[in-house]
Image (cartoon, one colour):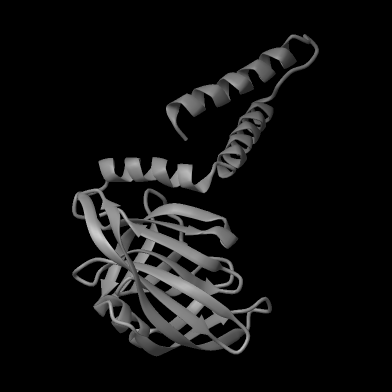
Amino acid sequence: MTLRRCITCFAFVSAMILSACSNEEQKLSPKTVKDLITSSIEDRRKQDERIDPDILIQAQSINALEFAEPDLPLASVRFDSAGIASVVRRIETNGQHTVWAAWGTDDRKSFVTKNGVIVATRGLFKDLMSAEADDVIGLVQRREEGVAPYMQRYLDGDFQIIEAKSTCTVSRGYEKTVSLATGPVPALQMFSSCVSANRQFVDLYLVGPSGRILEMRQWVGPLLGFAYMKHLR
């Protein structure tokens, strides 16, 4: 909570307390005052949660780029179906895998990317448990067209692990530009159009000349829906 919000919050609580104290017979105990303050802060938090996710991410991005360590990888991510919009930081790497979690908080929600593609989530409602995406990732990183298998394992509404096998057709799109903190980077659209027994979806990746995935829209599962991720630096 910012200083301005704190001031507004406590001013509101103070007004409530003064109003209550105007009645000489009514006394406010320390617990009552604490409850009023807690209730007001909670109301403010709920109002903040209704902020447009793009505006929230923009504000968090400015803050993170200013105060985070200069060599710490940062990205923005949205899981709209789970109501998540945040700037995330790299917290661990293991070979081609990177674990991401919210920057500036102790939130235990996290997700894992393999060469830039989300292959697992944890604590995000009904999680993507794992994914086998090497063939799709290879085509996307090389910016080549082709057909590749794709497997996702996720939790359904009954918390049972479901395997979803897809066949994906990877195709090239248009040249684009991705704006990073260090400046604009040329990128190529790579589409992955996937068909399974009961679902069709299209993932979109913006891939730099080196094969790095700079921005993407990726289907994570029927309950998490699409994830939108963009690297900040």
